[in-house]
Image 1 (cartoon, rainbow, N blue to C red):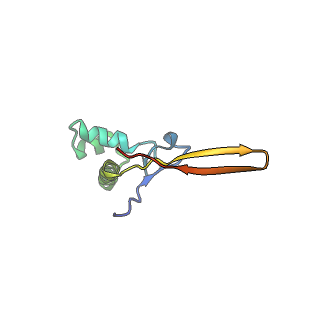
Image 2 (image 1 turned 90 degrees about the horizontal axis):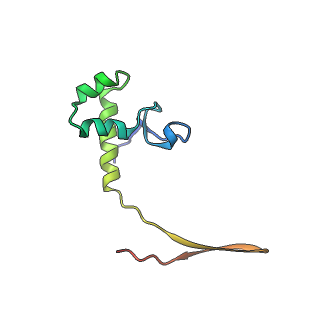
Image 3 (image 1 turned 45 degrees about the vertical axis):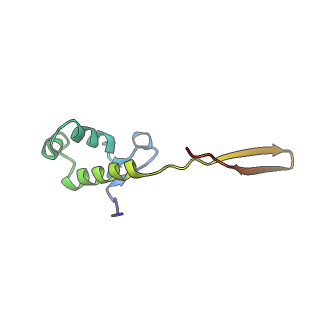
Amino acid sequence: MEQLNRITQQSEVMGGKACIRGMRVTVGMVVSQIGSGHSIEKVLIDYPYLEHDDIMQALRYAAWLAEERKVVIAALVTIDPKRIRLRLLPLKVP
């Protein structure tokens, strides 16, 4: 996948959501605008500090997330006074 160097995630910016170049503009905000029927030109007018490439990378990032498959790993942690044990549990995938 092409590098998404304009998409940033920082816990102190917008609660760790994917943002554009560290600004308080989330990928979700941009994709929502496009999904609502606004043109890229309209989004650039509404957010004059964004660039065309910012919007394109936000769309590519959203597409990548839509295709991503999340795997949940279950674990059992047991603690006794002498050690902590971690055992992975089998997971049934529907």
